[in-house]
Image 1: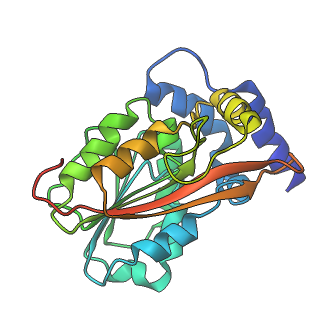
Image 2: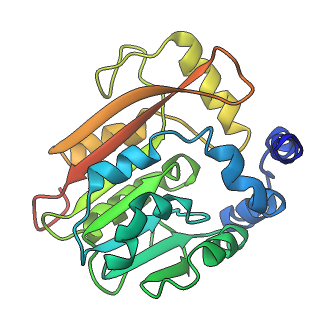
Length: 243
């Protein structure tokens, strides 16, 4: 594990390349660490299992994960995964999708798609769409959120778990993060193409006013005593058109 973590930490220190398309930068950054990706990030990316529990899709549902990476979040559905009508996992990075392909081999209802979360549309509307630590890595995050909402039918559910920082005065939920958190985390993660901001959650709450929101703190590997803010959001689309 130490050698694996060292490889990941080296890639984090090097950061994402500054040149190339978003897809090219992702591939360059993640390809060397794809096989070790989940072992490290299971200690960093908290709240994913809780998000899946809150989504609670019924048997026969159509599920879409945008920015699904290696497909590790699908494991949190457990034995229910095989009972969904269709599960689509969308990501721009071939190296991560390769890991997802290995993980989901033999699951005929799981389909992997190399595409942009801001523009991809499934053939049939999904009952549940979710992002797990993806919005902070998507340059056109606003387009990705609106795309997700617009593809949902009335009653469809959108879930998000991700890092964020509040405004100086607090919110967009009820939590006010310290000045240190608001300064440190966007700069720490920004080196690797991850951009925590209150704007994601502000748009989610405005577009899906019927929602559940949990705001929490989590430990960070190799950064003792520091805790990174993250949120879990689950909202329901009520209208026939995005507001």
